[in-house]
Length: 364
Ligand code: DCP
Ligand code: CA
Ligand code: CA
Image (tube, rainbow, N blue to C red):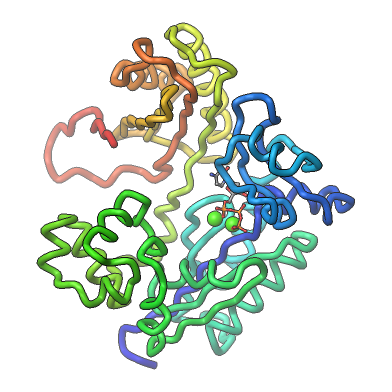
């Protein structure tokens, strides 16, 4: 085996929420199905099955628009406890292949199978076995997997042949796989960065590859360096099983923009209770709380606070949520959506310095 070359598998469930609903109600299989809020409200689509996607329905689209595109669509409300339950079952399957499993959301995870603890023989074969076992244990849920020497390439590969795909990118094929793809395939490159790069004449990863590092750094700062490396198939990241980045959150789009603080506070208080309870039920403890606010003009802000110890009560979370709310323009501008999430289920690292600050504010 090549020194230092790793074997990473990225697994992502196909149309996850919709697949779970259809699994529980097989008569929906061939119908267009949307999971999300009902039309004629201000809710949005969480996901849609592939039948509904043929009508142009996508995650994040207003449910009313989805219904306009496909009046015969079946709209189902999301059932998060059920998705979490299946997600846990899938995670348990993955951990049967290696302890090096990093979950990044309810429906996807990275595995580092370089060591091949079960002696399966190849990462490709491992990925095939994982897909089969997930399908068998969950009653037919399909997943897509990517195999590659680095995490971000495995992620792009899992998306390459969806649904029910398996794409293997061997180390020698990484560059020929990446270079024809648009830069937006690189995780972290959103519409704004893509536009910025397009102005520089960079649309594909191949074009990125041919761009000088200095120019990228001048235009994009630190991220320019990340992109320079990405175009070379390099990434400075490891599969970290203990640092589960899974967070537990809830959010709501209100029937009307809220201009008053009182209903917002009432909503956040309920969230604080639900989330504290939710985390406790999973036998976890959290120490970061993040508030998300979307204003009437769709401008979105997040604010978070990280404690040096775990939260002790729903009241404590609510107090911090109030503090965070005070750091937004809520109350002055109409609020369309509010959300609260808890994360960082890991204990803090021991501090080398005496008397650390109580919390570190973060903004984005
Ligand atoms: N989700 C959501 N809102 C979004 C995107 C996703 O609520 N804007 C939820 C619903 C999805 C789940 O997260 O089922 C997983 O998201 P994915 O992006 O992986 O999309 P899907 O699994 O639905 O579809 P795909 O088959 O393309 O992976
Ligand atoms: Ca998915
Ligand atoms: Ca996903």
